[in-house]
Structures are given as C-alpha cells and as structure tokens.
Length: 173
Image (cartoon, rainbow, N blue to C red):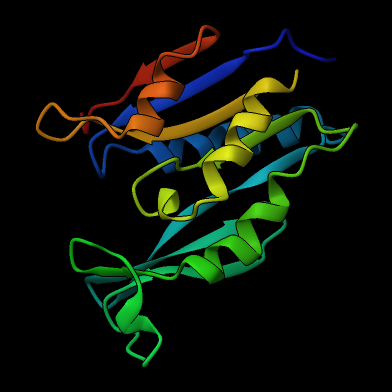
C-alpha cells in the first residue's frame, strides 16, 4: 500500500480553527475502517488550568505524553529554553518522545505530525526527521501554522511548496 513519493497532506489555519480536531477525527476513522493500519506520529494537546491555557504537551499515537511548552514550568534549566510568546519550549522533552515516532519503519503506512510549527522547529533534529519522512514513500498527514503577518517559517514554506503537497485550509467557521 505504498504511496507515490511526496504524498503529503497538510492542514493549515489559524489557532483554534480545528486542525488537531480534524487530524484526530481522520485518525479515528482510519483506525476504525482499517484496524491493521500502522500509523506513527504525534499530536499536540493544550494543557489547561481551569479556563487558562498554560502549555502544550506532545502525545504519541499510542498515548505517551511529554511536555512541549509551558508558562508555569520554572526551573534553573527552563530559563535557557527558547520562548514562543509566553511559552517556554522544552526541546529535550519534546525530542525524547516525538523523534522516535518519526523513525521510518518498513511496515509504516502513514505518518501523522501535528504540528510542524515554531515550537517544534526549535529542535534541530525535528525538521531533518520530517524531511526523511517526506522523502520516504510513506504518506504524511501534518498540520502547519498559517503565515503570521504574511511571514512563513522557512521549514513550513518548504513543506507547503513540496511537489506532492495538498493543502487544506480550515477557518474557525
């Protein structure tokens, strides 16, 4: 069931448009219709305290989690972490859980990556792993952020311009 090289489906849209929700629904539908499908990857989930979003965690498709970014973690180590807005990004934690999920195995049918965004791209090993997935003949279903103020992240531009990429734009409506 190998796809042609460059089978790349990208979901984009503003924060809150439903990119992760769509990816999770597609994943559930695929698992239900084809339980033997071997799907690898991860998604990101908000961490909330009450109504306030205090961070994000990375969740593998088999349910393992690790912190990705937080407004409330404060350790001597976290003072050196890169920031995106008010969030400090825990690169080591992200890499420990996400990178093994992007290793290409012979029996993998599909990769899911939610998302290829600014926080994830602070990992210098992340985008090379994404490129390896793109260059394999295994389909990729990923979410990417919408360009902010007309500026796109170079790695995201590379994905967006990939010859096999099909882009689906969601709006909050």
